[in-house]
Image (tube, rainbow, N blue to C red; front, side, top):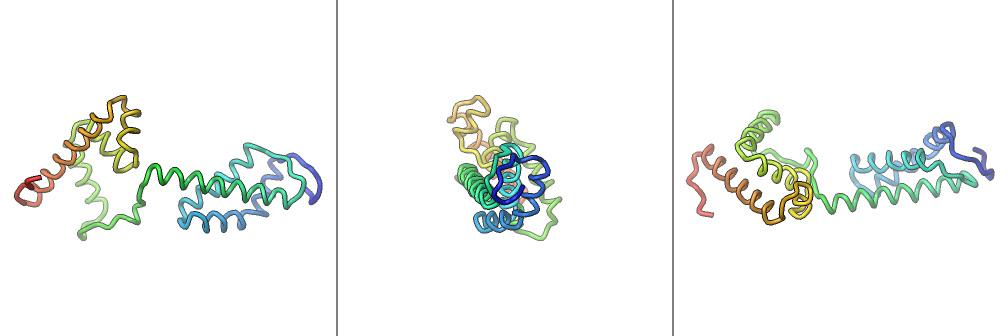
Length: 173
């Protein structure tokens, strides 16, 4: 694609766009997201949008502007998703003791296995996927009050199991 000429995006021009604008788009997504994983998602979504849309550009500046606008939109979409479904990365989780991660994960899996299927589903969707109780209700086909009940009973069961493992007296709550 030459500067100042109108051309349809084809695979070769997409490769050229990636070669030409990858650093620019990457820097923008990093600045906007402040998280390498989310920035990488926005970066990939930007160039995926270019592949899907295959727009016509009047110039290289037009192409650059389109990509930067698209990158901003992708960043905003990821940020909205993060606000609606907050999660944390494994790097954000601090293990309270010196046990290795896989053993800790095994212990957590064993504790979660003691819950009913409905409780495990509610716990996973709420705590690990970040869905609200209303969203979980739509996903599982249950009423929101039923989902809240599953979560409440699961927390009680997990608290009792932790107390049993630690030899603590049961909490009156």
